[in-house]
Length: 424
Image 1: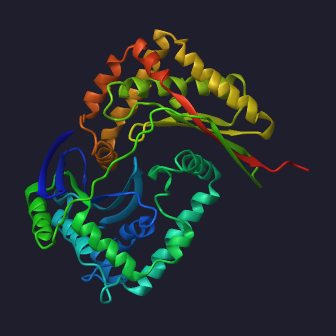
Image 2: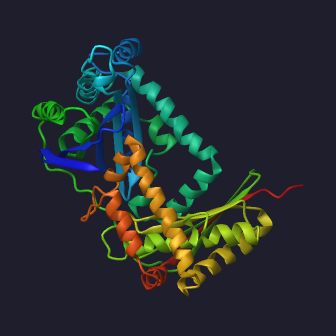
Image 3: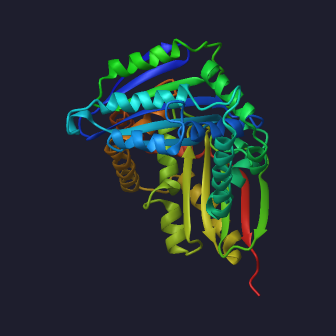
């Protein structure tokens, strides 16, 4: 990954990832704001609202005509969470100029379109256009409800919310249905102004396009914006769990969900971060892991069982789908398999198989523009940023003793069960 990064203005940076392997390029605007329960909904709706219209292309027909003229440029919007930071993104994926019929400047057309959307939305006075707001509110509510209806996602979110109820991490990145319903065009306009003036913003260009022209276009647009002090984005790390908290809900679901939240003491800039990655992988993050081979396969205690480490928050989540009668046994065996890792009950061959699985996964990052971008942006707050090749080398150097040390830092914090109603 050939990355060049430079400043546009205070708190706004431009990154160019040169890659000549693809027939498409990608440009994105990613905004980072602190998770705030009072502002999360108006922030969440912004990328979806901005990506649908702009002054120059004020309705769907105008916009679709322009997209077709640009060889079918694809515009997308996304809201995610990075530690205790809400991440808002709009992007355009485009055909590289050399593959167009007349060698048209598609890249610049895509950049222009993204700038039009981001800097010149359709407004009525000091508010976003009412009919556009209502349409996006309906779609955002559907998105929130879809996560409620997906009980695997619902259970994971509930465990995080209970575990981090006194931390910003417990805030849903999309807000609540009630918050979205009450949104006004004026509130969203204020959120947009705050974003332009004080949010941390990353512009990313991937592919073959002329990076200098793209940089100059964004620098010109931001020169028209009055930037104030950039809002600080930080994540609170709770090192160890105190008492173990347990929560449960009963719903009419065919398969119960058991989610367990752990504190790890280790986050992105700690020396043991890669050892923790390997420890979690041995425990439950690959097909060779103890959770998969034992809890799922050997003992048949669950339909799925896996662990995921969040280096930005320093937590590990274990998710499993179980029958009601197996909930307690599954919980006990999950903790037993963690103790096995802590005691070092795995061979050097086991660890090498796990490392190969991990490094193969990291190698595939370069297969897609979007995954390269996500890999880069996931490190945006890290002190020590690495390429995929550098990360692979670091993973290879992790020793068994380091894995054991890291594993012994993991403590259980919260257990959440979404329990199916007893069958008649």
